[in-house]
Amino acid sequence: MFDTIIIGAGPAGMTAGIYAARREMKTLIIGKEVGGQVVWASEIENYPGVKKIQSFELIQNFKEHVESFGVEIKTDEVKEIVKKDDFFEIITNNTKYETKTVIVAIGLSPRRLAIKGEEEFAGKGVTYCANCDGPFYRDKEVAVVGGGNSALDAAEMLSKIAKKVYLIHRRDEFKAFEALVSEVKARENIELVLNANISEIKGNTKVEKIEVTNNDGTKKEINVDGVFIEIGRIARTDLVKELAERNERDEILVDEKCRTKTKGLFAAGDVTQIPFKQISSANGQATIAALAAYQYLQLKAGNSADIILDRSIKKNA
Image (cartoon, rainbow, N blue to C red; front, side):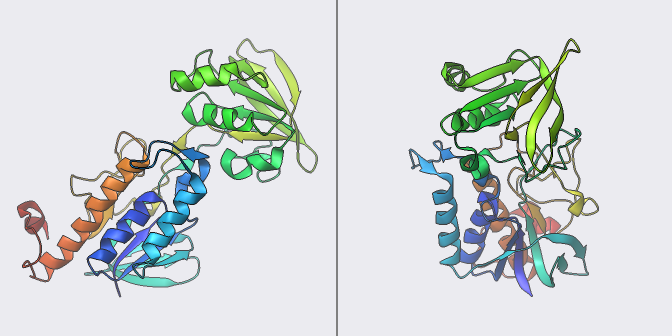
């Protein structure tokens, strides 16, 4: 029986693990991939106290920090959370666990284009992570789809590796930061394909070309070796659909203590309704979630000597 099981091994999950372990809670982190969404970034330049750091280095720092407190990280996928009388059963692909509290920190998932060829060529030229797969396309031609910060960041990064980058966006203006837009427009090997969508991805055993449909209905084909889809992230939270309230974007609704409607179930990071999806804000929420989970257990046990009492928590415990 664990005191808490944290679902998700990104910045929020790792932070929650650190704070839970420092309260001497028996803690387990379960995640499909260590690092979470950080693996999709190349460099991090807005993490407090660190001017610039490679994403893999930051992930390794998180991992080492968590493990220094004796917290185990399991690479697995949680398939179901079952609420029992006074604990939870966590069912994964490989086993079952029991825990007194749960912290959901699963982040967001990449949004799909839902076009012909996307699923067929996934992992064969279609990718959702420029940082992960960019190095495989050195001196090749690639397409990036999207108009936000993630898309332009991917295009800028790939322009340093690939021979040619086509940046395809359905509008004629970008939603990214102006400085990033200016940087992308200044790159000679980035070609902007605006007011257009990819309508099909083609190839034999791997991606060879894309069909682009302009907003006026005209079509053309562009030869590329890879397609990087950067059109946003979505919350996949059916895991807790019976245990937590969600908004229209399927984000988990939590209060100021990161509590859901189910006692003992907490959520933190990008998967919640928090408006700004940043590492630092995810870390802050995860800190609150871990400490709130600790308070929940202490108050439930009637042990309040070493915690700051919160009347609203005590009332709901």
